[in-house]
Structures are given as C-alpha cells and as structure tokens.
Amino acid sequence: MTIVFYGAGAVAILSTALMITRLHAVHALLYLIVSLLAVSLVFYALGAPFIAALEVIIYAGAIMVLFVFVVMLLNLGEEAARAERALLKPSMWTGPLILAAILMAEFVYLLAASSGRSLGGAMIGPREVGASLFGPYLIGVELASMLLLGGLVGAYHLGWRPTSSRELR
Amino acid sequence: MELVPMRDGFLLAAALFALGLTGVLVRRNVIFILMSIEVMLNAAGLAFVVAGARWRQPDGQVVFLFILAMAAAEVSVGLALVLELYHQYKSLDTDAISRMKG
Image (cartoon, helix red, strand yellow):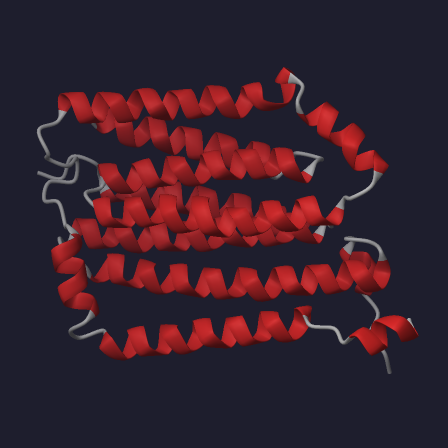
C-alpha cells in the first residue's frame, strides 16, 4: 500500500521539476495542477482525507483558476490566437495527461484495495480537525479571516484604477 | 505500525521545497516566481501534515488550513501586483523593476 505514497510523491517531484523548466506559463500551470493533485493523493495516503479534499478544491481549484485567469488576461491579441492553436497541439498536454493518468490509477487502486484504512495507521478525519480548529485554535481562525479580508481589500485597491487617471495616461 | 516512515514524508517535502526555491531563484518571469512560491508553501504544509500523521494529532492539518488561507491571500495580492506591473512596464520580467526610485 505504500506504493501509492511513493508513486504519488514521484509524480509530484517530476511534475514540479517539469513545471519550473517550462517556457510557456500555461504549460507550467498544467504541470503545477498535476503536482498539486499528486500532493493531495499523498495527503490521502497519509490519513488526512479532509486536507486532501481541500487541496483539490482550494489549491487546484480556486488558486489555479486565479493563475489561469491572469495568464489568459495578459496575452490578448493576435499572437494569443496563434498561441491558442499551439496550445491545442497534443504534444503540449500529453505529459500532464500521462502523469494525471498515473495518479488516477493509484487513486482507483487505493479505493479498490483499501477498506477505509489509511497507510499511516490512524486516519484523522474532519471531525477531529474541526474540533481542534474551533477549540484551541479559534484565535488562529479569527486571524486567518482578518488576513483574508486584508488580502481582499489589498487586491481590490491594487486593481482599482479611476477612469480619470486612465485618461491622463 | 507506521507504514510510511516519517523520514520519507519529510524527504518528499524537502525535495518539493528545494524545487520551488530553485524556481524562485532561476526564473525571471514573475508568474513563474509566484507559482514556485505556491510549491514552497505546499511543501511546508506537507511537512506539517506528515508530522501530524506521525503523532496522530489533528494539529498538523489545522496548520495546513492556516497555510492555505495565507496562500490564498498572498496569491490574490500577488496577482493584482502582476497585473499592475504589466500595465506599467508591459513586461513580466522582474529585472524591469530592479531599480527603485530615489
């Protein structure tokens, strides 16, 4: 059963190494998403299913959507259309597809072979995490909410530009 | 009955952190730098989860949640800065902003 941990770890390292060597940002994003999915499978193998789900939902979902949005926003125009055609070539997405297929095979194996038991022995579910989060770590939750509010206000302030100053430029 | 040894989990986290650090140091595109920072934060959270799984405590997962919130806030502000950088300099190269005013 430990083969799931080592396989997912190898996929994570390989896709991260491929991520930092890509020239195009979209290809790097594909490999980064595969890397995050691999780390999520590592979390599941370590007995943290709640964190594995959050890794997929927030990291590979929300944060990567922000990255894709900004990358697509930054190359508008005619060369972007040529780049889109180049992106749709199969040689661009076969690498992430192969790595993601390895992860999918490991996931199916993990679901089929295990009877709800984790590799690390005891599985720590959402109940324990939630009880600890809103018990002794309640001040941390409040601080995290204030940090997120600060991030929201900061991003809004940086992205806001008045129409008069745009006309002046 | 620790089936996955803690050393291997920490080695995986260290390898991912080193790869992210390499990306920050080598790449000059600011989008790649932000993505490498994401990898480093993820590796730090992985180390916490490995330690939490070793001692059967939920504290490691709680710290990972805090890292997740911090990464979300950092990415939103960072990407707003990237857009501002592109609007002012028409470039994503960090060498374009290596000089300060004054």
